[in-house]
Length: 271
Image 1 (cartoon, rainbow, N blue to C red):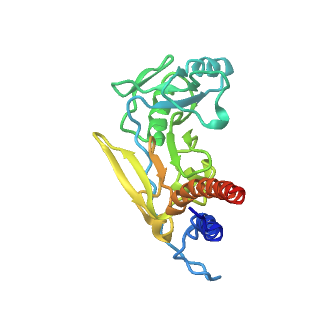
Image 2 (cartoon, rainbow, N blue to C red; image 1 turned 135 degrees about the horizontal axis):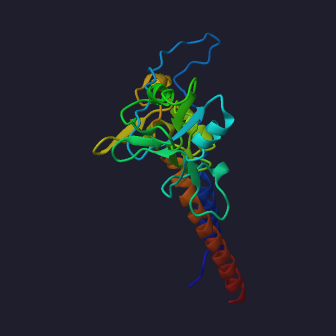
Image 3 (cartoon, rainbow, N blue to C red; image 1 turned 180 degrees about the vertical axis):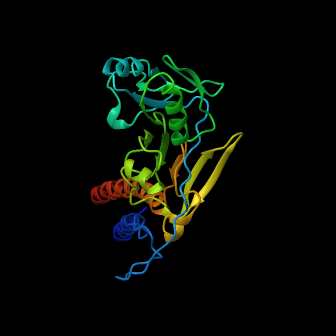
């Protein structure tokens, strides 16, 4: 059988260029694509921030300051909880450590925290500012002019998918929005599907799944703009990421076909 070398080589060239065209760069990269390119500022009302409510198994960082340094050190010496289920930020993990140590007071199943000298105080159902006021009142029954600060020690969020650093992060500030969370994860990659970001949120008895469009400027007014503890953000890949994966396979096929064509040309010359 006589092989038409020119026809076969032409087919190889077509396959090669098809493999290149199958991986075009994504065009849907910027945020807020519905915001016009103008110097005039546009004001959008944001959703009011609601402080999270303390729940059982939360870990609270509680600091008590008194006029006596010895008493202060004693009061703050018993707030270390080793919790294997808490994922610390990437920058704060200790190499070789199986479970990071989280400094704080564990809220019991009854909703209480137990402080030295003061005893058990019920804090479940309160915000951190309300818990601070309650603890200040109780502590000042034993120590004069004590100053109490309360914040979360295990406010964890998880960012997965098309971001630079997918991981779980413990956030020191409870007021965090979705762009803050994505910023901690190194922002989205160019293959992220910004108009279809999935937010998974724990409720009392189930999980709530919400789709968010980060190309819409009204996202700042969404009731899901602010992130809550244990939220999971999943950034899906767009069609260009899938195409780029297919492109690698196409390139290998084109290379294999090119090698095969060289072998056929060489064999045809020998025959």
